[in-house]
Length: 88
Image (cartoon, helix red, strand yellow):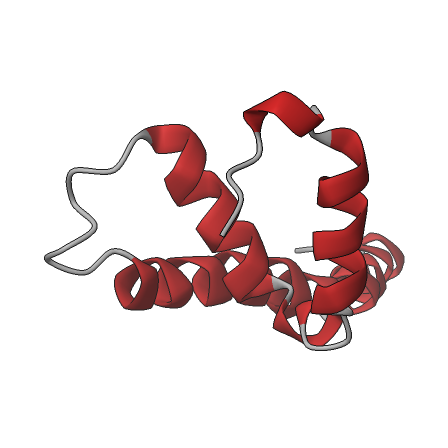
């Protein structure tokens, strides 16, 4: 009925591609689970750009943990015009 060579060839192609499918869908599911954590009742009124930024930080949490906050503050301080800064 079926040619065995064609059947086993197609089966081997499927077996080669099958392990890739869960990895790509896993990243998508992780993004949606982070979205439910980030988008709380208080944050429903935020603009899309801010929500995207918070999502990026939440998804890439391993990288965000290693950011030196003091270096970011110093970099921002150097880039902001002195007249716009408020003296405390």
